[in-house]
Amino acid sequence: MEDNYGQIRVLHVLGGLGVGGAECRIMDLYRNMNRDRVQFDFLVHYSPDKTGKKSPTSDELMAVREPDYFDNTVYSLGGRIFCLPKFVGTNLLDYKAAIKKFFNEHRDEWKVVQGHMTSTAAIYLPIAKKAGIPILVAHARSAGVDKGVKGVATNFLRTPLRKEGITDYNFACSKEAGIAVFGNTLMEKGKVKIIPNAIDLKNFAYDEEKRNKIRKELGVSNAVVIGHVGSFRYAKNHEFLLQVFFGICKMLENDADNKYCMLHGIRMKLLMLGTGPLMDDMKKLADRLGIYDKCIFAGNKSNAADYYQAMDYFCFPSRYEGLPGSVIEAQAAGLQCVVSDFVTPEVDVTELVTMMSINDDPKKWSKKILDDLILDDNDSDDEADAGYESLVATGNSAGGCSLGDREGTSDYILNKLRDAGFDVKLQAKQMAYFYERGNF
Image (cartoon, rainbow, N blue to C red; front, side, top):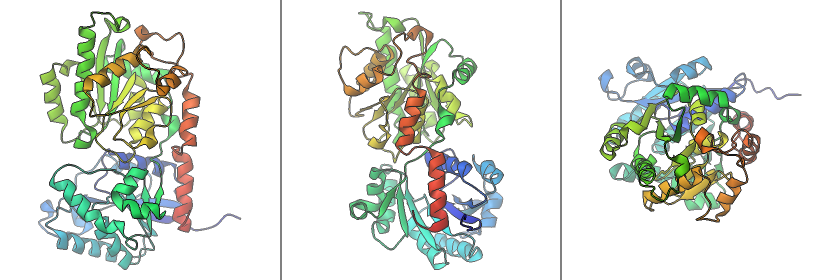
């Protein structure tokens, strides 16, 4: 006989509901959850300035808050959105007052509060516990912090999370993220559960029809497209990405030995999905490098999965990550990937991934990508290269811009990702079990 728990409500605490890695992964989980049994609500943050109050209520903040990317998704799935004043360091007392007010006004509504915003989790989770929330979770989704004062402050605010008793459960998307937020001691004691950033694998499986459609829309039907997906922030290292693409273009222009003759006459394009505070700076850098006309700053896309199909290669030179879902998505789409070795190795699931150092000259990355595009293994007997070459079709044609047999290897790649725990449908069942029972 099936257990009857009724509908459980879970409150997820985030900075906002924009197109970030954590937000995308939570929405994937949400869409695949049995919402008759488990329903999600969201507590986000927004500047209180427009309210004229230092410690406004959630209703007052929601009245002035600008709608975010995933708002409509939440409402369509039956969730609710609440708001706290943005924490800026100097408003600690006002922030605490707003949190106390919020949980006192919403007693007994949630069984679980899951804090993905770990910078202030040590502030809001204890207050939630005093208000009677049965289960508190801190969820680490990043293995690093921004440079400067902001990074120092984030590490300081996370310090209490390295001790037992602040939370009931600690989750992390990777071992590196767990150590970064909760410390080695809790990791070694087994007090941190690793939950990979799972995706809807089938949604990213290679699709020739979608590929042709997006490439036509972008005007790149006869081009080789290097792709990247990520917000324009310090961690993503877009300046390195642009230098790599610049190197690719220069190597092809100065290819006196005709090493890359298969690519001569074929346009090269860099397709970047995402927005963020550094986007304008990167546009200016692309212009200074003389490659702006070859770059596509596509912004955020609701059908991002289709854009992976349009790419021929994926480049991801991040300075730090928790566990980047975009690298998993790229593999699911059958794209060969070159990825920074500062990124957690858990993303290295299939033969499609090569890890390289961002301390290397960007030209080394450029050469690697070009060699892969022409399937040139003369300079390397690397095991990963050999593994990839065993996947691609012997009749590969770069001229047709269909590099590797992505369709033929799709089932193999998806099964490897599924076996590694990256299937959101399976994870939704596992998490529903946890939300209902309070254990795994």
